[in-house]
Image (cartoon, rainbow, N blue to C red; front, side):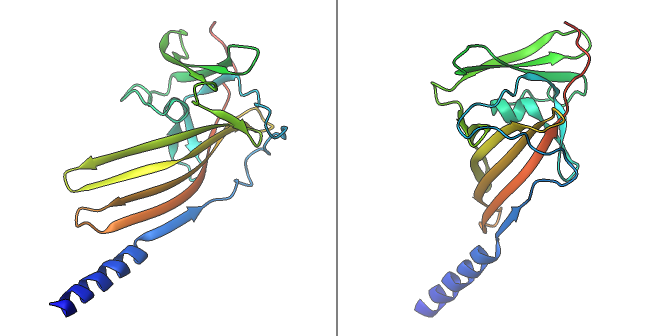
Length: 194
């Protein structure tokens, strides 16, 4: 009995080690250079950006979901939406984030995040938002947590550096552990409706 238990523990340990991986990307060389800012000064990321951006791998990524840590199912993927980001106080404590229709300027949803409420901090020349996401479905699940750092590039695009750790298990209870750093980019909307 003890021999079988030892074999199970050894196999479980091997699966655990083999199922852990990491993907630590570097800033894409073909993207505009990040703007230099002072360490703990909040960068001015105000602007209107296309909601549909790209990960450095070329896959689409959606700004409203990333900056608010909440999505609107089906709506956020529409190509005709933009995200307006605006500081709404002189102390740089509150940021208005608005999802709007590019064609007519209609507001789909908006949210205010506050530094004083712990929604974000300004550090290392970026607006940083901590996040925790996860799910569990019957026999598999995961929890992902990390930091999203928003800053500007010299061409005016908004850049996200996301560093996260994910832990969970597969449907046969093999544990997973993944550490990732990836970059996303959103272009500015150049024509204004309102």
